[in-house]
Figure 1 (cartoon, protein in one colour):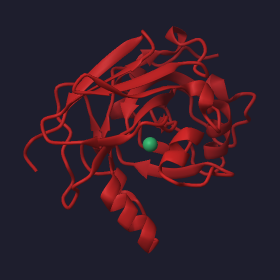
Figure 2: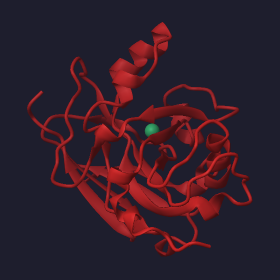
Figure 3: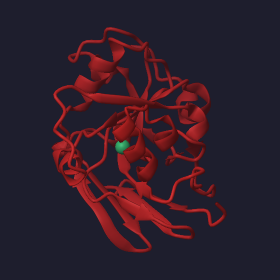
Figure 4: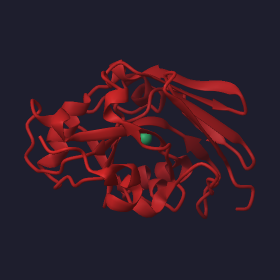
Length: 221
Ligand code: MG
């Protein structure tokens, strides 16, 4: 197999898309009164939604209810399409810890009116991410603790073992629709405990004892 590209640490510049999965943890689907999906619920965030530590999360216009969602991100190392589940993990280049920031009020409006979620999920700053994590640092991504605190108070504390659709299934499923390319990011859904943040709040999130990230919410609307 080809050696992983040195570019992968720069996945934000190299990748062309962020494919995100909604409702991939039963407990989270239940807390928002959503049914358990029978196949993956997919949406896209553009790469302009990325921010890294030191940059602040902004409210999108019209949003008064901004929610945190902590997620494991899978960075594609080797592109492809029509990938089998059996071969899926060969396409993983590494991981990140990510926040799928969500304008819950705009999303509720979109859901009620049959509109797409783009404004609720995909605005600038809606995808804070950690630095790239080498694949070999996470030998088993299907059993990882994910947690998130707001101003020091624990809000989300889950485990990737509770995913409805596991990573190999998601890679295979998505690759039947989208050509996966080096540096693309797959957001794998959030465990329960999502909730609002307000201007000036500090969000801290972690992936087991592998790493933690801190982002603050901008106080200019
Ligand atoms: Mg999410």
